[in-house]
Length: 395
Image (cartoon, rainbow, N blue to C red; front, top):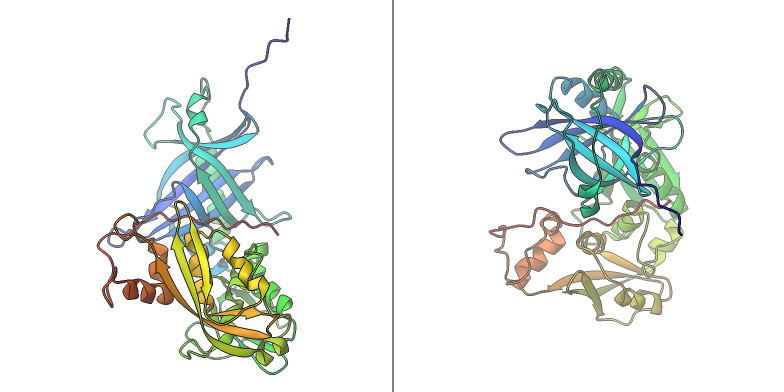
């Protein structure tokens, strides 16, 4: 007779809270996700800022890494509504449950599977990203005799108070990135001020990328030799050259800076000298055709090298389409060229809802106008609120 399998049980049970504040006019929300670690009295904490009635339900969400915002929101949200959470491992997966504020009888409602990332070392905040997705198996897990936490409310309050107290002169900065004949120049300044607080000159593209991605990679602020504590988000705080100028080849670096994983066919100059010496070739058309679950790409126009051609072998998510479109140029090492791109979209307007993320891109907005599905200067009658983002922080 075979051995009788022991029933699976929940393990590594931890508690937490979701603290939420919603703007009743815009639907924009601030969401603190606070989760106990395995070390007693410690919690991981992350702030997730969502727009337009989007909720922290299913999907991939980026946590705020701006320390000025973290301390401000921790202070302002101490008295906001809270929902109790529980996390546990089951069958080698991590799940999360929630409990309504007025539930006193220990009823836990399945939320989904959860993964999240945070900086290495001893820091417990900020959570850098969280991914939550539905799993039908969760509803079959027995939640009998799983109590609520008696002290999680006090613990979360203490964590937020601690974050709020760390107002240590963080300076929110923008980064103006440009390239000379031999070096990149990254100038750090306040959003509303041209005064240069810090300047880095660097010949190597990878080193520039590492500096700009530093907060997203580490979850830390950047301290200069002069003792300034600079905080920025590489997704929104980088100004690529003169953005009003159509001839702005440094925008080719945007995908390299904003993503840790990229299609293999994408290439980037190794140095500033290699970028500025590349020949600019116009009118490479990126034609994205919608498939059943993703987009396929056709590259039409001037002759390109085999590595760029290999981009046609990939499948692209909505967010990857935006990333390529906003790069404005593609670098071709074989041709020593920067190809200035145009973008067109091929899809059945009767069957596909326009992804909302497309409306964040001026390039794709123009492509939608050109296709006739979007009036010039307008928006469609309906927009998909939930778009995928398959970014993986694999570094």
